[in-house]
Image (cartoon, rainbow, N blue to C red; front, top):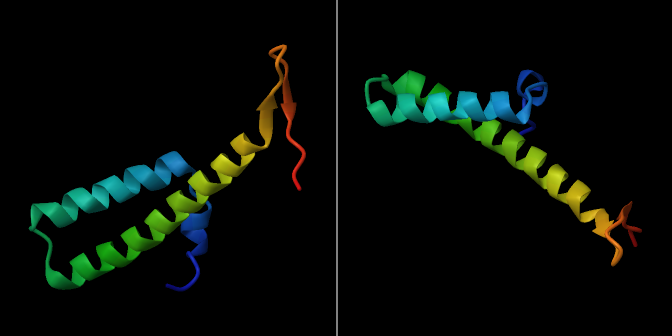
Length: 79
């Protein structure tokens, strides 16, 4: 798959996920013609990739945080 389009890259995780859910609903309904279904599927693939990247970035940020034995939160040293 090629690079995620810039209009999708600008979306927040929540907005991208909402649009992806709408696309899935449309595809599952079976009321969309073949050409539009292909467009929906393609855009949905980009939205999924964008959401996955946002989640991966969030996990990396969370992994940088560590909790000391006295309950203090600090940023973990990255090797």
